[in-house]
Amino acid sequence: MKLHNPYFPALCSTFLHIILLFTVTLLCLQPATSTTLTNETDRLALLKFKESIVDDPYGILSSWNDSIQFCNWYGVTCGRCHQRITALELQGHNSLGGEIPASLANCTKLRVMTIAWNKLIGTIPRELGSLSKLLYFRVATNNLTGGIPPFLGNLSFLKKNFGIL
Image 1 (cartoon, rainbow, N blue to C red):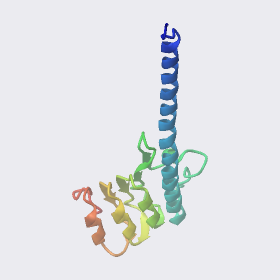
Image 2 (image 1 turned 180 degrees about the vertical axis):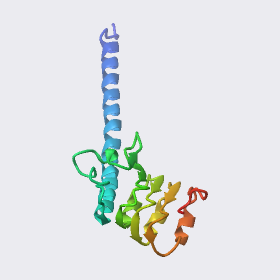
Image 3 (image 1 turned 120 degrees about the vertical axis):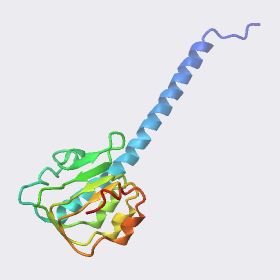
Image 4 (image 1 turned 30 degrees about the vertical axis):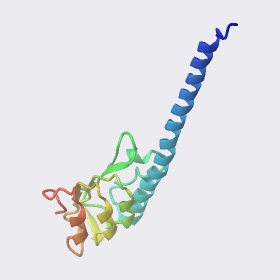
């Protein structure tokens, strides 16, 4: 009595390939879905920033629209893997007037925010104290009130030599 099936190795190999393909497909789909949601949060935070700018005489933020992906907007840098905002660099234009919205705190991967040399008014939102990855925060030469908020001292990675001045 012969128990060995000559097709058994081929069936096992095919079955293993199907399982591997299914597993890889699931792994690839899951991060993409979660990244899209967090990318959308970042995009909405930037649009809120643009909405809070009441004076943009040079059209610095004119690229901030749906015609191009937000990681390609002027002054915005995103991480390669996660496509989340890592830098917002709008320093030196001496033209952007408006307030800093609290919604920027939703950009949780933000490491650099340089918005100095503009005409920003109001206070630095308390919510920005939750940006635990923030290394550089430069807001000098604006029309901000209230001084340096104490909650910025809670940001352990903030480079004190670059600071907010």
